[in-house]
Image (cartoon, rainbow, N blue to C red; front, side, top):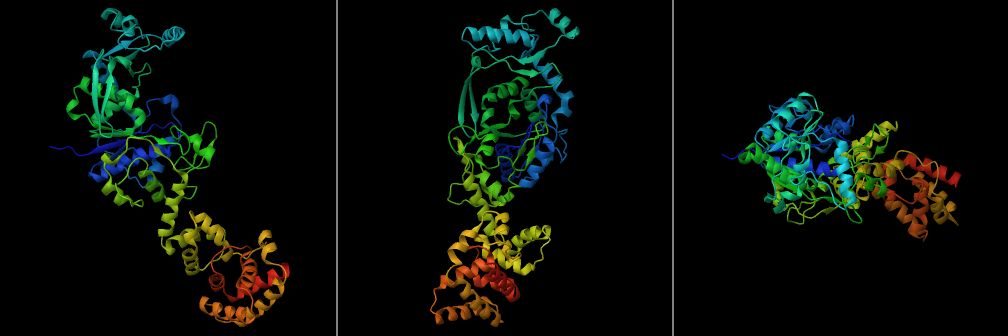
Length: 506
């Protein structure tokens, strides 16, 4: 019988969630939804020295903002809990001891100072010290000590770690869904610590035990975990869990926009774009990091952009709803090579989502800012403004900033535009235009266009000679949509008031 797909996103609460982490969560989520499976959230907090207060809450809030609903795990519950590794501490010791009993692991009593001295001695000879099949034969561990000596050390409370006993010179041919066959030789691998002297498991042991107990069917994680694959597969074999071992898939790296290497949080600060889904303040340093949410990105645009970093649908389509992504996503379309991050393309995605939003939806967003600024507005007018303006912008905040003149009369006028357009006979023409505007009662686009155009033609004036200074008077700068749209929206009274003020001021 085929097992139900169960995948997990298992971050460590060591800081803000990098967009590479969000993409890992997204690909797990899409895979689960595609196959009607479960998406779990597990917090891997075994390394208490790197724990950052507030990081776990930040991870949960970020996933919510991104629209990635957790089926089971931290914050959602479930029958395989607890889902925080620090709360599962009692589980791991028995598994570590099981590996010792089966001869797949051993107690190591070497002190940190002794190991440092060995590393230094090797460095002086131009070598690298590895705790492995060769070196372990000469070190202080239960493979070399008598059972009585081991028991005595344990009873005396001597500090120890439990290490995995890596097989000697074994060729390992392992399968990765994205990369195909990957080869390792066990002699080049070290005897990793599985259980630490502080009574906590390391990532490797806790990860395998939890994935097994939580019935995880597919492990989809970043490429940086590929070197751990042989150890993880050997641990499954050592426990006798080969039949239920998950399928592994290692996602390509997200690369810097320029140059080579993995995208880091520092790159965002240097190049002026966020690398975190939401704003985060480091409690230790007080350092503040930008977030996509606070920078005005729509979560759907952010997710759409991330989905196409390393995966493609095999078509030219670029805009996908979450539902479409769930239907289309499979691991065979994930690329092996790294995906270059493009901040400009991310803005393009946001623009596409902004333009696709209804005028009513955008009016609600713009209305929130108008309310916050205590500005009066007419809802239907705001909708009309959004319809006129949205094609020009990537962000709602920019749309708002540039259409603010509809609600607030200019208090100052753009100096460069004044020099260019408010010169020679412009003041005289504007006074004549003001009288004409006073005589018009129907301020619809069609009527004002007809009346003013006829007046310009009759006086044999260039259109720009009238409309440019007119725009400066009403808007305060040479920007905005068609002037007949502008005056229809602000109305006759406001148009005349602004014209009189501009003539008096300029």
